Length: 258
Image (cartoon, rainbow, N blue to C red):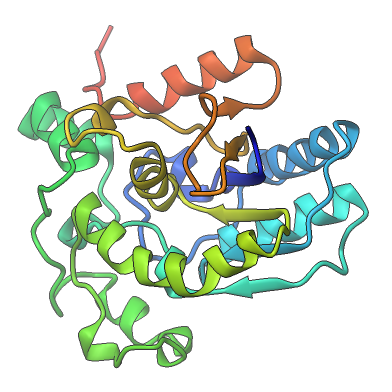
């Protein structure tokens, strides 16, 4: 029987989602479409009668902005928002800023799929020669983390995302769920996928085919041991959701020239 409800949300479309670039830890605001996605998500959750007690986000603007817009659309702006770098998007290392479709043309779709979707393959690390290195590591937000800046990742596999996320999940999020509070985690494609892998017991192989579109809330109903009692539900128009999933999956395909 369902005892707890947990909502996961991949932020609305960001500027670099639109450009099909690896965004990762580069701080990007939402695109115009991303703002609309977040507002639509909030309206949907309000129509379905959901109320949140607390919201968790990463420390990247697109995750925070999505949470604000969702809560505003729900008329629940007062609900506390708690931020942690441990919910950040996966660190894509030296791939940051590169276009996925162009990478697929250069390296092949399978290689890009491995970098994007495999569980335990880490991309090449970012170093000081990378055009976005200083923008990331000189950002004041990374002085607020619970680890020294020099210990922050330089690249991550999905497994490493889960490794840095789990201590926060166990110490901070789980106690809130056990209090019976309803919470929203407004995060990123890979931090949400890592959590789904943990909660649903998805295999290392099968996690590669789990796709979360931007701005679509995912409802998990959990038992007292925080195990799902039914399959996850992506809320909203199912036809639009399937089209959005296909769009995300196609990002890693080489462009065909006509």
